[in-house]
Amino acid sequence: MTNYVRFFDTTLRDGEQSPGATLTSSEKLEVARQLARLGVDIIEAGFPAASPDDLDAVKGIADEIGRKDSLTQLGEEYKSTPIICGLARASEQDIDAAWEAIQSADHPRIHTFLATSEIHMRHKLRMDPEEVIDRVKHTVAYAKQLCNDVEFSPEDAGRSQPEFLYTVLEEAIKSGATTLNIPDTVGYTTPDEFGQLITGIVANTPGIEQVILSVHCHNDLGMATANTLAGIRAGARQAEVTINGIGERAGNTSLEEVVMSLQTRQSIFELEHGIDTTQIMRTSRMVSNYTGIVVQPNKAIVGANAFAHEAGIHQDGMLKNEETYEIMRPETVGLSQSKLVLGKHSGRHALRVRLQELGYELDDEDLKDVFRRFKRVAEKKKVVTDADIEVLITDEINQPVEVFKLQDVQVVCGTLGLPTATVRIVDPNGLLTEQASIGTGPVDACYSAIDHIIQLPNELTEYNVNAVTEGIDAIGEVTVRIQIDSEKVSAPKRLSPQREQMQYRSFGGHGASTDIFVASARAYVNALNKAIEALDLHNDHNNTITKD
Ligand code: KIV
Ligand code: ZN
Image (tube, rainbow, N blue to C red; front, side):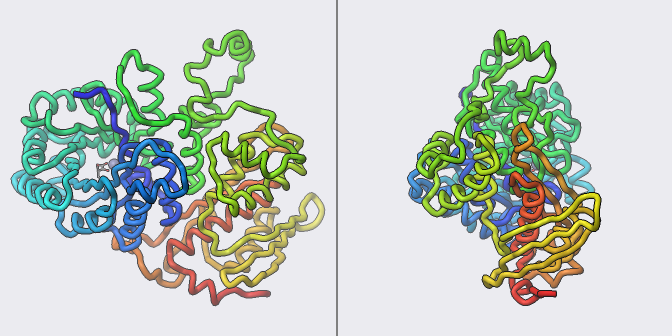
């Protein structure tokens, strides 16, 4: 058994299954690039059989992130080229789709799964145990003749009969599996139980020493990280995780918690990993912004309060010696500590240098956009901090989808009269439309003006505003979530069979500005743009733009 733990990131597959976390293909590609910078060993890029769009998105990642030549095209340095993995149910059709999507990668992997618990076999699969074993043998062997690297997962292993599990795993190894992943699909087990399950598998599965044993935990009882660490201590050498712990229901194990546990408690675990921890915050912000899933302030490692010390007694201790209350240094996870960076007299070159120091390599066009936004912020704030710069980057560069472009926002509000907003938006044909509306409040007025122009019926289900830095002149970040009733918009052209059955689809949006109404408008337009792209409504929106 080696002492290296592989990180298998499934943000783009299990994470994207979080309610409302739909990502567009270009966002998936950006996340995958960032995961490569972070140094994950394997990227589970999606579930290609789900729809032609999913297949295309995985293929794009295999082509661009899974190949050394294209990954390094922008001149960036990466530790290594990650394995690109596609998920497939235990069927030839799914496996063919996965292979079609990933085969261009330097290191492709097919991940196939079949449930092994009593309850899943009887009620979901309607198969008896012998049929399950036969299907596993057949599908793993089928995947193996396409791809040398095959992962098999017995779904709901946490509630499966251990002896049956040993037999299924033995057959998967004999059929060619190279990684065996043990999922606690419903987050039911406790750390002791899960650790024992892995110990039992190591002791009782013939051939187990030839393969990598992996763990995949869900967080329904809040024990995903503890269970994953118990699995690793019992011999697993691959951890399946997501950024910020997003995923089905209560989510998956979070990458940052497991990595920082292994690192901070190295003397207990004595294990190595390949993650560049200084990329953690950047990855966390990107995933939160794209998915619209806000990170709770007290979330371990990446929450806004994870490194904040409020109580006087703690602050006093910190001033005397940081180790009194700090078990990790914030810089280790990429939280910048420098406060005084740039101001309104700083030029483009100074901004470029600071961005490089922060790890952002921008081309001239992107630098121009960020510099324009930076100047506007610098006119309002005396000091532009690293946190401000990072949020501008996220807002400006990490916004790959821009069907409609918000140009201007003006809001009049207060205790006198009705809140009124005027917005100016450029449509996909380059036409500028201006619209004024009233509302119950300034944000409502803003959104109502935007609705008049973009005309995509939806319900705003979430609205959050956060200050990025302290002070009255802080940049505000707004995250929204909208829900689209697919019966109220014209039929989407290409939706997955699973998603076709979903009448309601959610989309997240993000915006940042020193003016929270501008940030609010940006976030809303961003969410609408994502819905238009994901539901393929571009054509409808080329024709429905009206000017009242
Ligand atoms: O939770 C689960 O069982 C899964 C499998 C597909 C590995 O996500
Ligand atoms: Zn899962």
